[in-house]
Structure formats: C-alpha cells, structure tokens
Image (cartoon, rainbow over all chains, first blue to last red; front, side, top):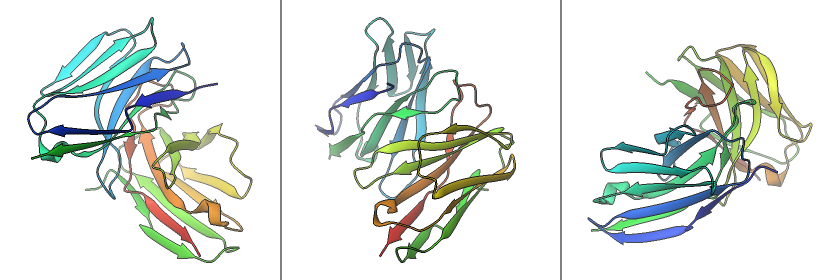
Length: 112
Length: 114
C-alpha cells in the first residue's frame, strides 16, 4: 500500500546549524512531494514542494532533493533559527485523486 | 482574509452525540479534503471532493458523512461520536484534484469527546 516513512522523529540543533529530514515513499507512481511546517496549535503550512521531473529545488534557506530511483526525498534547512522550531511533515501524492500521504512528522527544535 | 476557514475551532461534546464541522474556501479551488490528525500528530486523509463529487473515501466509518453543497464548501457530519474520534480535523483545498497541486489547510477543529 501507500506509505511514507519519515526520519528522524525528533531533531535538535543549535542555532545556525543545518537540519536534514529524510523521507522514503513506497508508491513509485507518486509524483508530487510537498513539505509542511506545523507550529504548535496551528495549521500545516506548505513551505516547499517538488515534482518528480525535478531533482532539487531551493528557496532561500530551504531546499528539497528527490531521488526517484531510491524513492527518497529530503528537506534541508540551513542557518537554522529559533523560529524554525516546529513539526515538519513530508508527503507524497500521485495523479489519482491528489490525496496526500503524510510521513509521521519530525519535531525540530532549534536552540538559541 | 482567511483562505480556508473552518467552524467551530473547538468542539467539546459527549459520547454518542452527533456534531457537524463546516469548511469554506474562497480560493476558487475545485477540490476539498478532510484530514484527521490524531494525538500523535499523524495526518491521514479521510475524504476528498472535486466540484461537489466524492472522489476519495478512505475506509472511514459510516458514522462520518461529508457533504458538499457547492465547490466552495465541504462539511463533515459525525454521528454517534466515540472516544476515538477525539482529534484535530483539518479541511484543505487545492486547485484541482488530479495530484501535483499545493493543498491549503484551514486552522483545524479540535474535537474532544468526553
């Protein structure tokens, strides 16, 4: 069945360091991979996404890489700041219906 | 100007009651979704509607019945509430339902069953 595995479940870094979160998906038909940031008590907010025809995408301090062969994709945050602290979710979807299959989430803590 | 709005924000009720959650989007999107986020923060799709037509029903109990009067609204009615229904329910919308479209989430409805 469709499954997305996300690691690590918790990640603690010092301010200014980089953070990397990794996801693996099971359905080779998946072609859209968004990342969401969810602060405590708030809605999931889309921070970056990538489609299967692209290997890497960058937006300021955030980048996402995709390896279709290995069915892996990763989120990279550079120069982390305390306001980056949140739960981050990866997700995957394919053309049928557009439903998002989410990873389990990573709680990122950036210490000042 | 909230793009995807849900009401109520909080819902506390007794087991066995029936309740409804409403969702409206002003983005002009064709597709709307309901997701459930459990106590461990896991997000799972429940339903999806495309232009008022049900396209996804993820083996959700029959006690949950979505209704879409028009493409800007997707409501969720829950009958005979159970303890396990306690969760945060998020509505979302996307331009189209064919995949590859960013989904925008509402603020969520925190349902607590006593």
